[in-house]
Length: 238
Image (cartoon, rainbow, N blue to C red; front, side, top):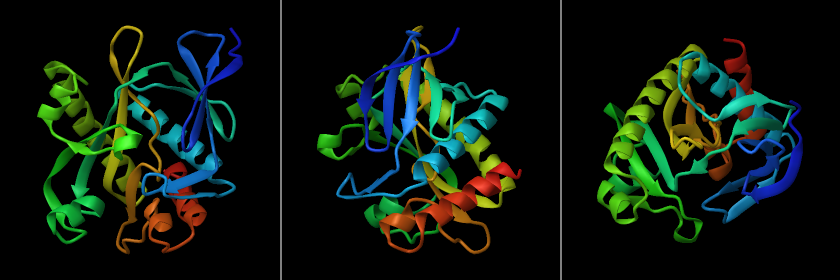
């Protein structure tokens, strides 16, 4: 059956989500928007939508090959893809392999310090509250997840980390940290959702530590498109 794009369901900072003629399939269109600091800094960069879509599609395809269940169905065009419809869990899951960004600031640990074991942070997905860092107890108070669901997401997240590290290692890129989002499908199963791209990952070039992610834009330390193109070309060639 041909999938047809219907009315807009939701528009976020960097993506527009549309309904389709299939109840459990959504149509995603990436935007050229780039934001930082919870939207306080924002610009339009022509070409970013194409790179985010292609990088995320490529990574999801690689995750599928490794048996990581996710919402991705297929890439439709340079800026569009089809995904399974899920109810997004209002939780941002951050996996950290190396100290950087807010963790360095918060704990006073030098950026670049390699963690003995990866750690997991949870953030309450709420724009009005600036996605605050929360604890497992807070997750229960907010009734976001049950205990068994929290354990399942933790297990899935650490597994995804191992797979992603391998994917990026082959491309000579260090996976410093990254953000994941999950959703519940029509059966109540937890699936990896959203996107995986330089917008949601902190990526450093092996050996040189050149930044290849949105920190280039946050810190005004280079050209965002050039950095994202390097990531795509490195991943595509492996």
